[in-house]
Length: 92
Image (cartoon, rainbow, N blue to C red; front, side, top):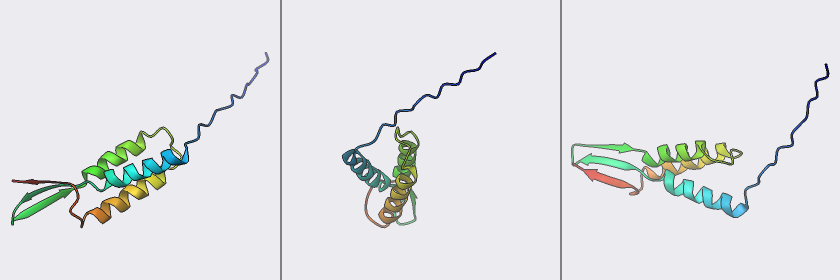
């Protein structure tokens, strides 16, 4: 009995530079979105809504080559925008 193994060549689809740049800008904008629930002046609860959405987008990305870079951009945008007035504020 002869077993014949055939190697299949996988086509690697490359992402263009402009698509990669647009995706990084999208992750920067999405990662900077916060949901802040406030009851002035007693308390405030910040929720990193953009980080959660961005992680979901990055985990379902077609090009999974640069996932670490996407996560890094999301984290930097989230930490920088924590002190900036960016996002949605809900006052109760």
